[in-house]
Image (cartoon, rainbow, N blue to C red; front, top):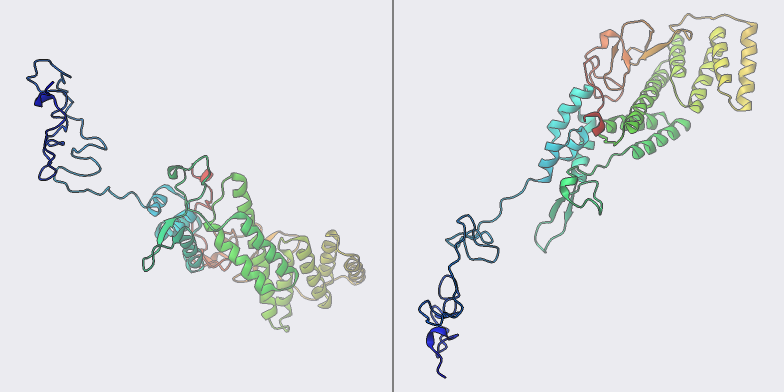
Length: 392
């Protein structure tokens, strides 16, 4: 039979021009489907759907806010997020992480408060390397700049979300410092004292920027500071002795004794003690030479060295006595002031380096510590902080 116009799918004419009448011409795009309002048969009988006013157009709708498009058709780009460097500087509380974030001012304030560092020139290269290593540059299209992306540590398949990390990748680690320590030990064994001094100092300048995870590793880092201090004090005495004229026998003997008094590895300690034994025996300081002989034998040296020590000890016991009076008492524990090169015996007044714990005469307070060349002697500092476990 004939089809009524009110309920048909479309008109007889196909007109694709103009406003495309008949195809979604009205707001809801459903006019002409399901019959008219005056249709006596009712048809689909579409009822009005009243939506709450706070429900806008969806992701596929045409309302305001869909895909960032407003009512006037203007596209609003999403607001930029927080840069990784800014997140790092806000959430990380360690000096190494602040330096990796490029927040050098914050890192320097932390190091001054914790370690009393006042001269940052030895740390400049390390801090810049940290900041550069925390980012990677990816090549883009030809004649376009590369894409710089932040490198965060701790990524795993189980925790892919960046919110779970928010810590920059670091280039300094405890195993790397231990490798440097082995290299310094090798230089000491080979007698390359300037190279050893440089390596020990490099370790001291990297430790303030290291980050470790556990308290056990914190203790290992602090022990590393003590090792470097002892070796640098001893090397300062030995290199000073080599620069001292041989005619100044008193200074030669004192500096050799100071070097032998430092806490070093057995192989290096035995070499320093043996050197002091020979110097004191040649200077007819037989009592002190005998003391060095006994210390050397306690270290179980090689048979050849042990035989030489016994022979020297026998010779010293036959003719006891000391030809010179020097400022060295092996029976009284002491620290060595490597500015004045004088011993500070137990109970004496001293001023201390807040980082390494090296001790100096009170008149050295306020000077830059020669052990590392970064800290001010005598200032108050809270101490080394290199792990999140120390600030929780």
